[in-house]
Image (cartoon, rainbow, N blue to C red):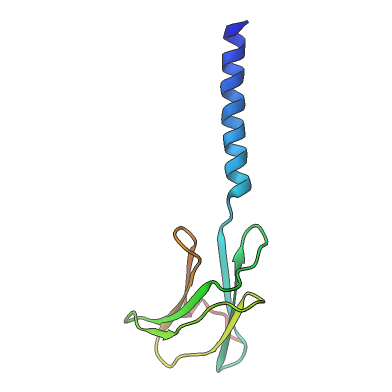
Length: 109
């Protein structure tokens, strides 16, 4: 009887550990689209469906200069004027929750 209980207990422990990790896991998501030739709008959030108001979203030049410092608004979006220099967008919700979007990956209007 003891030999049956130990493997069963170990299996349940592994299953519960995996389940709790998947419940708590949420990946960062960010999408940027050109509204017109001059403006870009980025929307950030998480894979669990939650928004990201107040999360840092900076527009950074290829020389690592911050061109547009920003934070997502209450609707988890930030709209900015397209920089003249080459750039990428950095959505930074903390360690392990960072998304980079290169200007080449932003859809034209």
